[in-house]
Amino acid sequence: MKPDPKPETQAARLRIRKNIRSTLKTLGENVHREGLKATPSRYAKAMQFLTSGYQMDIDQIVGKAVFNEPSSEMVLVRDIELFSLCEHHLLPFYGKAHVAYIPDGKIIGLSKIPRIVNVFSRRLQIQERLTTQISEELMRILKPQGVAVIIEASHLCMMMRGVEKQNSYAVTSSMLGAFRTQEATRKELLGLLGGLRFSR
Image (tube, rainbow, N blue to C red; front, side, top):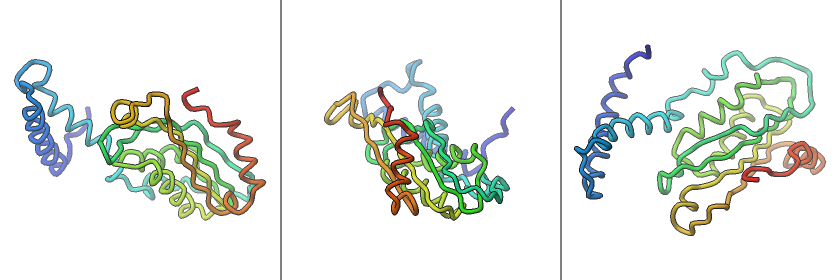
């Protein structure tokens, strides 16, 4: 059984419930009908989960999972599923992150890389900032020779509204260190990825 939320979390949840209930009324909905009675509560809980990255401490998440290792070969974790909320419309965007780094005496436990992606994706985001935050954080933690992050994502704010282009998706990249300065290193990464495959 999960413990009760912290008091400040409960207070925030109550405020969100009140606000979304008011929004539903403004939209002309009957907040007392069966399908909507519990919606404000479910929405508040969902939003707190989807923005839980603000409360996450990366150093605590990484813990002791950074190891001394003389390896200097590229490490790539590809196809990391991610879900986030666009800060402009509060609509989801989703896709995959590909994260690579070249060690300089230190490596990180592989499972920590998707966890770092989660920390930043579970916030109100734009894809460009998300890509940069992940790469800069890995540079801070590992001080490697280089870090590369490529994100491919579909945005519901483009698919459901606005231009309504259901097959569109965005690709962003952040190349730091050797990935920025060495063309051969970038080519090696793109060769390992074998092209961008999201939505194919």
